[in-house]
Length: 92
Image (cartoon, rainbow, N blue to C red; front, side, top):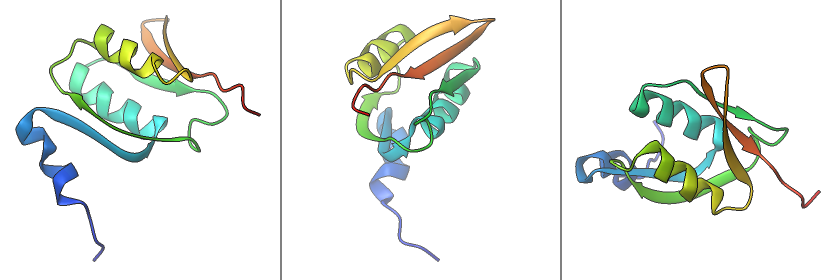
């Protein structure tokens, strides 16, 4: 057994995505299931950098991409029928 944040797991009942210290790879999996398109991460930090936030589940993907871009680290590109979330970090 492990302790979990019940609020995060119940957020869907309120129409929300919650990301609590999650990698972009984990976020891509959730968004892929919700939007029904293949969304993949790209970048050396895709499994290292973590994000926390709450977003309305019924936003369009275009709005979701705009919100992710506000981090100044993520941009969404379309390549070969997939949405690629690119990690662009310049703090190295």
